[in-house]
Length: 105
Image 1 (tube, rainbow, N blue to C red):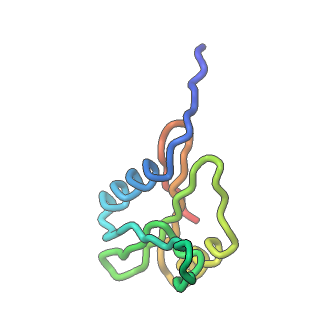
Image 2: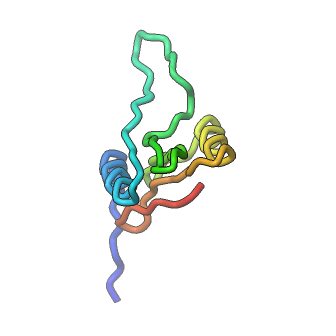
Image 3: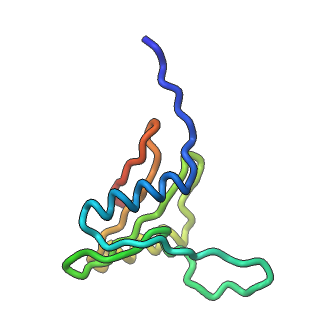
């Protein structure tokens, strides 16, 4: 039996796949840029997910995108917990083997 070689998908590939999947699930979602810029003070909220949006019934959707070697920060876990505890949908888009998988937080 031949072993399947796993290649590390980029964050952009995982994000694009997750956006398609979440849109297919009838969520209105978008990429959320929440990055620091050199020379400027960061003024956003720490930990906000890479993909955010809403469901048809008005609930929040938050999806954090992680590559094989990425880990959630404490701020990201806090944000996902707040979304989940307020009735929203908290998700992770991760790589499993050579495919993107969306799992509940």
